[in-house]
Length: 238
Image (cartoon, rainbow, N blue to C red):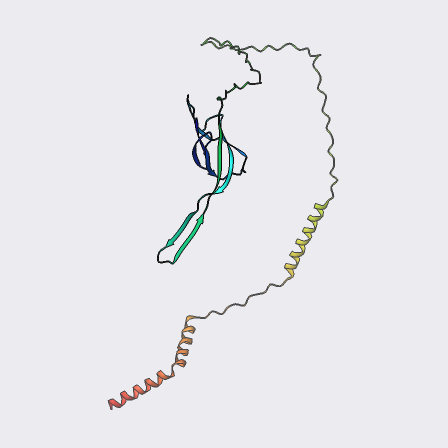
């Protein structure tokens, strides 16, 4: 009889009396371990395959010791970069001895009993439908009433409205606002109106004369050159 269990992300094929080296777990020497993740159980008579695990199947083991595995060297290198790294690693492991393999019967599912009592609905009686083509009008019969027995409506009493006893603050505020507006109007009427000085209009002729006078004042050298040129012309003619 053997079984396949899963622990530490790995799968192991186990029999009674085998010694396994698995990934370290939080157990000490002499304690029992139960592996409930059983994927397969093979007996001489039948084989049970889990989906993904077999129900009510477990493997019991006893911890022997915890130790470190063989050293693994990790070496890194990058050529032409003067980069080299060398490290060693030893994985922590757990030694377990398999004691027994237990397989139980498959659990039976019990039907869920509802405590609430079933509610039975009474069938509703269908109303008789009138024959097609004929419309029937229902007559409303009112019982006769004696005039003496009718109650006389009593006249409604109107309750007088209560006068508001709130302080007349709103009236005082309105009067104060009117006084302020009247004062502002009187001050505006008494204040003299300032007249803005009228701007003098400059005619385009005056602008042109001003420009010509400035040009004449600014260019005395040109006048001298014109005189010299006129003198030379007279000399040449003579």
